[in-house]
Image (cartoon, rainbow, N blue to C red):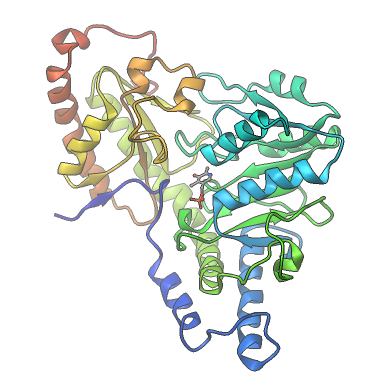
Length: 400
Ligand SMILES: *Cc1c(COP(=O)(O)O)cnc(C)c1O
């Protein structure tokens, strides 16, 4: 039985064409891009091409607005620490309660060590940002706004371009964690007010350990890593050349596959979601039904433990996730679902299915087939027992 992988927001399979493109950079083309000889020059040329490919995916004005990093976490960290340093006299950060831990934990650390005051903007039941609270938090004390483009757990898309305009109005820098958005929704930075944007290779069919931070030309910036003059002095250290080449190829493929993502992949996701909500009692979809990533479905199954569901899915050869990979394994329900005021009895049973170009209709049908039986079995075992099914929450399934 072929395994069904529906955890693409945690990581994706490297595209075979990406592997093929990067391999020569371990062997024949092993040079250091900074070297003045022929070995370096050929690698330097390939690096330039890769940068152009990523520029195109982002719709950026210049290829040198791209700074390669080791991934999403480093890009987020660089953006936040840079802004705090680059705008003296401003020591406030505006972010949201539903950010990735790489943003939230750093903000909490900066707060604890007295380096910044942080506003954590809340969200509503659909995960949409509280715009009044956002506007109220903006002032000339704010150095940086960091708000994610799309949520990794629910797929909810945030109108970051408008938020960036508002931030610009008070002279603050605007950063967005777009790790989940890039490759899934169109991105065009040329005419936007977004100053910095994070992306990660392994979320878009490139390898783990490579990513990028877009830094708009003219945006004030301080490097995290100092030393060599790589990346125009904005990120010292010899570039991960095979990774960077891979990211370029992945960007080229992402442009070609965007229509598939928003068409076929979205249809598969919708089929999965509707069938489950119709066949399983007492479950509902989390996230904004109107503005959501095409590949992500977060479904809360009331009165069951997500970990137990995952165990049964895994036995059936299906890989999904509870909330984010970073919070699974902990007993606390997801901070994202709690910020959305999802009842704890439902947040504990939330499963994230995240699809990609690698998924087929058969994958989705397998999940639809096994899901009702798994939930029924677990509910029969749960302390709520047969009663659990009768106790309805105030929530109404969105597709029921
Ligand atoms: C995966 C992820 C990250 C972290 O990226 P890494 O490359 O694994 O460090 C950051 N933000 C979001 C939204 C993510 O999904």
